[in-house]
Length: 187
Image 1 (cartoon, rainbow, N blue to C red):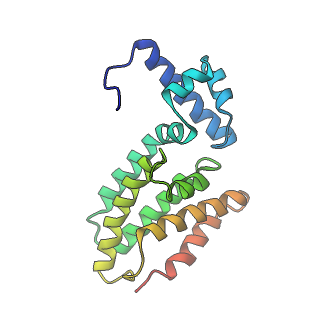
Image 2: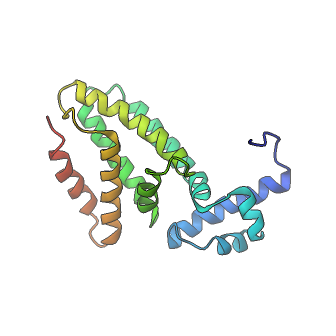
């Protein structure tokens, strides 16, 4: 059962400091950054970190809530686009950009997609639903094959982001891989 009582002021400050330091650590060293180091840089003990975030995925989910909101907002903006396939492609590009923002995020998202109990599923479920709506519109318009699933597309976007992460010198790799993939989506 979730405690619905408001957090004490010091607990709110600790939570915000932990999120700030987690964002910085994930940006600098990737999503495998040391949780002990995040706690230390936040000025709290590891126990305090674990009281707020029971595991790494819970911390990652909290860190990525702003990006999640942006991706969901973008899907709503694209929902009534004149060209449903182009809208889907635009949104998939945004997913790849998000997954590529932090080293290790694409790998974590791929593994979380198979674990409904993962805290990261709080990110992937709404994204899956948003993508499903865009995909359905594109399929209904006849521009995307009907045997394509949103699960497959999300795995592909994470795989593309992961491949691009492995070759950071090639700034165009993710877009080339997405373009190649999309040729197989067309009806």
